[in-house]
Length: 133
Image (cartoon, rainbow, N blue to C red; front, side, top):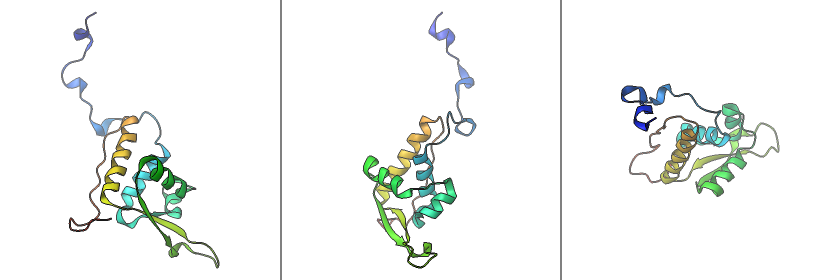
């Protein structure tokens, strides 16, 4: 059998990103990246990550992204998360620079591609005259 005869021609080989179903469930880091990018310049803290996708150790995921993928984050204590006396506040994490946002978006799209899904694009979080998120 010839290869040309087995290869479909025409519109039946077109794949629309909206109609593609994932090949497997999302990776945890994929959920983290999507949530971080969706939150934008507000950043994310542990309770918000737990509410969004049941993340129990956001600091470990942030460390994995920093050390493994070279994505820089800024962390500050979020005093709004303190509920009890002497409780240590959770950290709120932001992507440090716009280049880190682009890296995070590229990594998210890499994981989505591995699962057979289309690309996502997120708008910049700030005006063009500002350099950081």
